[in-house]
Image (cartoon, rainbow, N blue to C red; front, side, top):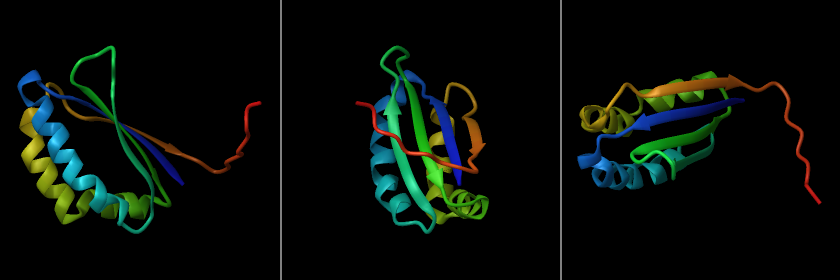
Length: 102
Protein backbone atom coordinates (compact mmCIF):
# COMPACT_ATOMS: atom_id res chain seq x y z
CA UNK A 1 0.00 0.00 0.00
CA UNK A 2 1.11 3.56 -0.69
CA UNK A 3 0.31 6.63 1.38
CA UNK A 4 0.59 9.95 -0.42
CA UNK A 5 0.66 13.47 0.93
CA UNK A 6 0.42 16.05 -1.85
CA UNK A 7 0.95 19.69 -0.81
CA UNK A 8 -0.51 22.32 -3.13
CA UNK A 9 0.16 26.00 -2.40
CA UNK A 10 -2.42 27.86 -4.46
CA UNK A 11 -2.13 31.57 -5.28
CA UNK A 12 -4.82 33.62 -3.51
CA UNK A 13 -6.90 34.58 -6.53
CA UNK A 14 -7.43 30.87 -7.37
CA UNK A 15 -8.25 29.39 -3.95
CA UNK A 16 -11.95 29.15 -4.76
CA UNK A 17 -11.31 27.94 -8.34
CA UNK A 18 -9.06 25.18 -7.01
CA UNK A 19 -11.62 24.07 -4.42
CA UNK A 20 -14.38 23.89 -7.03
CA UNK A 21 -12.17 21.99 -9.47
CA UNK A 22 -11.19 19.45 -6.85
CA UNK A 23 -14.86 18.95 -5.89
CA UNK A 24 -15.40 17.74 -9.46
CA UNK A 25 -12.57 15.19 -9.52
CA UNK A 26 -12.87 13.64 -6.05
CA UNK A 27 -15.93 11.50 -6.92
CA UNK A 28 -14.14 10.27 -10.06
CA UNK A 29 -10.99 9.39 -8.13
CA UNK A 30 -13.00 7.46 -5.53
CA UNK A 31 -14.22 5.20 -8.36
CA UNK A 32 -10.71 4.41 -9.60
CA UNK A 33 -9.42 0.86 -9.06
CA UNK A 34 -6.99 0.72 -6.15
CA UNK A 35 -8.16 3.94 -4.47
CA UNK A 36 -8.53 3.33 -0.76
CA UNK A 37 -8.66 6.96 0.36
CA UNK A 38 -8.53 10.33 -1.40
CA UNK A 39 -9.19 13.38 0.76
CA UNK A 40 -8.50 17.09 0.48
CA UNK A 41 -7.70 19.21 3.52
CA UNK A 42 -7.06 22.92 3.88
CA UNK A 43 -4.37 24.08 6.30
CA UNK A 44 -5.96 26.46 8.80
CA UNK A 45 -2.61 28.13 9.56
CA UNK A 46 -1.39 28.62 5.98
CA UNK A 47 -3.95 30.24 3.67
CA UNK A 48 -4.04 28.61 0.25
CA UNK A 49 -2.26 25.43 1.36
CA UNK A 50 -4.28 22.39 0.31
CA UNK A 51 -3.16 18.90 1.25
CA UNK A 52 -4.34 15.68 -0.34
CA UNK A 53 -4.13 12.53 1.77
CA UNK A 54 -4.29 9.46 -0.41
CA UNK A 55 -4.03 5.68 -0.03
CA UNK A 56 -3.46 3.43 -3.04
CA UNK A 57 -3.25 -0.35 -3.21
CA UNK A 58 -0.10 -0.26 -5.34
CA UNK A 59 2.32 1.87 -7.34
CA UNK A 60 0.55 0.77 -10.51
CA UNK A 61 -2.76 2.08 -9.20
CA UNK A 62 -1.13 5.42 -8.36
CA UNK A 63 0.51 5.58 -11.80
CA UNK A 64 -2.84 4.83 -13.47
CA UNK A 65 -4.49 7.55 -11.36
CA UNK A 66 -1.93 10.17 -12.37
CA UNK A 67 -2.27 9.17 -16.03
CA UNK A 68 -6.09 9.18 -16.02
CA UNK A 69 -7.93 11.55 -18.33
CA UNK A 70 -9.58 13.51 -15.52
CA UNK A 71 -6.28 13.99 -13.68
CA UNK A 72 -4.47 15.13 -16.83
CA UNK A 73 -7.24 17.68 -17.38
CA UNK A 74 -7.05 18.71 -13.72
CA UNK A 75 -3.27 19.21 -13.88
CA UNK A 76 -3.45 21.19 -17.12
CA UNK A 77 -6.05 23.52 -15.61
CA UNK A 78 -4.60 23.96 -12.10
CA UNK A 79 -0.83 24.06 -12.69
CA UNK A 80 -0.91 27.80 -13.40
CA UNK A 81 -2.79 28.35 -10.13
CA UNK A 82 0.12 27.06 -8.01
CA UNK A 83 2.43 29.40 -6.12
CA UNK A 84 5.08 26.65 -6.16
CA UNK A 85 5.42 23.13 -7.58
CA UNK A 86 3.18 20.50 -6.02
CA UNK A 87 5.13 18.50 -3.48
CA UNK A 88 4.50 14.75 -3.15
CA UNK A 89 5.55 12.59 -0.24
CA UNK A 90 5.13 8.91 -1.06
CA UNK A 91 5.29 6.33 1.72
CA UNK A 92 5.38 2.59 1.08
CA UNK A 93 3.55 0.72 3.82
CA UNK A 94 4.34 -2.92 4.43
CA UNK A 95 2.27 -3.46 7.57
CA UNK A 96 -0.71 -1.76 9.20
CA UNK A 97 -1.96 -2.18 12.74
CA UNK A 98 -5.27 -0.66 13.75
CA UNK A 99 -5.80 0.39 17.35
CA UNK A 100 -8.47 2.25 19.25
CA UNK A 101 -7.63 4.85 21.84
CA UNK A 102 -9.65 4.60 25.01
